[in-house]
Length: 293
Ligand SMILES: CC(C)(COP(=O)(O)OP(=O)(O)OC[C@H]1O[C@@H](n2cnc3c(N)ncnc32)[C@H](O)[C@@H]1OP(=O)(O)O)[C@@H](O)C(=O)NCCC(=O)NCCS
Image (cartoon, rainbow, N blue to C red; front, side, top):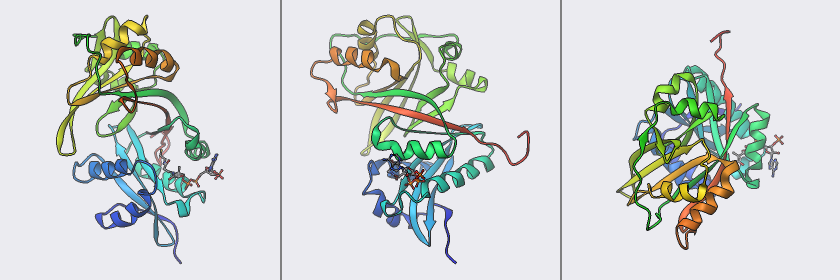
């Protein structure tokens, strides 16, 4: 008898996965995820889910560090949607996460009505909404603003925790969040800076886009600036040439933050100099098979 099951992704699955994933949004992200876990050897794995022998879904699990995992790229063939596939597949991925020794699995999804099926899957599986974040990308800079110098912050982790942040944003070939555990303090503080009195986290890396190097500056904000109008243009001046700046911040500041950003660069709007989005971050503790693990 044929049944449903999870299987580790292999290159020969690509054709079947692409056949349905192409019909859904952001197919580029599925390809990016496959690349990350195969040629780039990012810890974790890609999986497919079979229903009666057919590949019905694709998803991946990244192992971010020794404690946290990240579920990404879930795509269910429209012919199989609303039959519990994503729910069962996610449970199977959680078993992989547990067996890897990680204790928490997170994922993010756009804060918009069209994502109601994902919100429902999260609710059914007992995931908790950890936070909702604005995540905006900028590739134009305010012309008359000099690139600011950043000072080191001695303990940005403490400030972030005090401000109620639960997760830290990571932008590296994808967008991830890891829990703000005390074990993360040193890691977090290695990227802790101050800009005009505002503590923040900033990382830089270079990724290949269409075969060319592309610079990424990623900023996590957890303290609201006293004056968005003067702070945000200074922040946007950090956007690199031949690359982009991505800023992650509590969604409650969305209006003020974006108004200040749009005012600082003439004619900038969504998809023209910037790309504006909001995301829900969900998480679930993953318990080991033995009590106390
Ligand atoms: C989101 C997605 C993965 C869900 O897969 P799925 O296999 O259909 O999910 P399930 O069947 O396990 O659960 C879907 C639930 O959402 C519910 N649902 C469907 N449409 C809904 C809507 N418009 N509003 C509220 N609930 C809705 C279903 O009824 C079901 O809940 P139920 O079991 O209580 O009836 C799938 O729709 C998909 O691939 N979407 C496109 C890609 C995507 O958005 N991926 C998620 C990226 S984070």
